[in-house]
Image 1 (cartoon, rainbow, N blue to C red):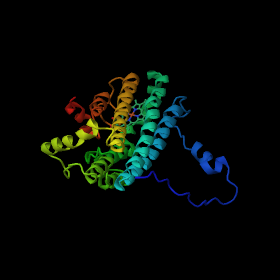
Image 2 (spheres, rainbow, N blue to C red; image 1 turned 45 degrees about the horizontal axis):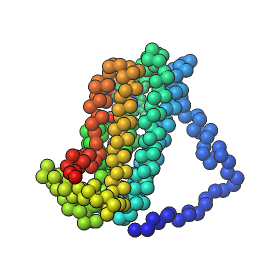
Image 3 (cartoon, rainbow, N blue to C red; image 1 turned 30 degrees about the vertical axis):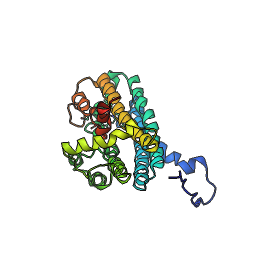
Image 4 (cartoon, rainbow, N blue to C red; image 1 turned 120 degrees about the vertical axis):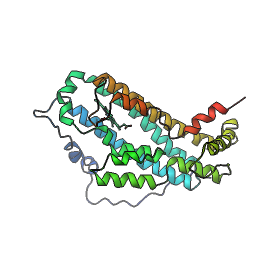
Length: 273
Ligand code: HEM
């Protein structure tokens, strides 16, 4: 399949465009509103780091949707191109969390109570990223019971094809023996058998192999983000409960084992020389 580029769109600019009007910089810079008075010095860091993550999550979702679209069209390398973009974004998102460690635990406590009960737990876009990748979990929708717009977004993500669905449908269309989901344990064994040739003969199925490895990268980086986040949280608040009502570090550690593509990890165990 050729690597087809998108066509240049029509330009809609009216009047003279500047950097500030195009990027809405004044509006963007007016969005950091502290909850403390006088504002605690470190609250600016806390707000900006979260907002920066939310902006990147928006792009991640945009790119994952594109990857799904291209997989559905059978354009393997084009789909991989956008998965790789998401992986590169996550490569940035993982170390970014450590900027927070420049805040002393005591100083964070000076304004933490002002944020209660807001929590990263309520990041709709983070949950959408999980759902879009393939980690759909209906239970999380309940936590947004006071936010119908958030619930609607998550329900839409529950119904939309995930990257995982699109990947396995693509393999099926390429001739692999992939059963329709949901999979029983026996079905999973069949899927593992169907995945083996990709790893045994990567050169013969290079586009498929490259896409598969990019999906493992995506899973790895999502996991690394979770691990770095929980370390930073432990360093800053120890084992205090979260403002979102969870046990805090205990809960976050339990999420680090989540995988959107568990079978791509398991197939490695099955490989033989
Ligand atoms: C001082 C810094 C931070 C602390 C102390 C902290 C603490 C926590 C805690 C305790 C939780 C568990 C839920 C709860 O009960 O509240 C949580 C969840 C979460 N936090 Fe943070 N966090 C920090 C920074 C960040 C940043 C910068 C982000 C970037 C988006 C973030 C995103 C999330 C997300 C998405 C969750 C939900 C994770 C899941 O359910 O799998 N957090 N955080």
